[in-house]
Length: 56
Picture 1 (cartoon, rainbow, N blue to C red):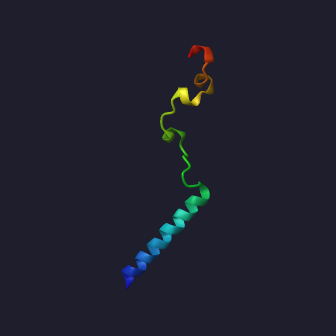
Picture 2 (tube, helix red, strand yellow):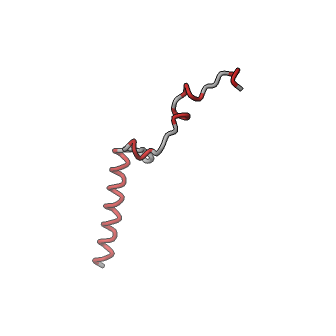
Picture 3 (cartoon, rainbow, N blue to C red):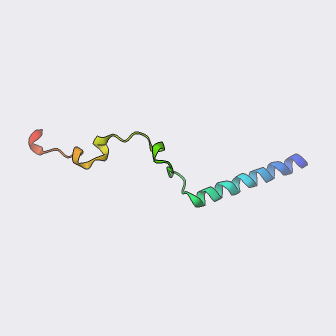
């Protein structure tokens, strides 16, 4: 009985921690910009994406 109770307490504790984390930061939010991955300049700089129609 003691181990079943401790498992239930652990589950409840994990759920509480997860809920608290979701209140602080929404799920899917990247906190550290370095974790966002490589962003190619051609995609992030609008000036580099626009082409003059005479260059085609």
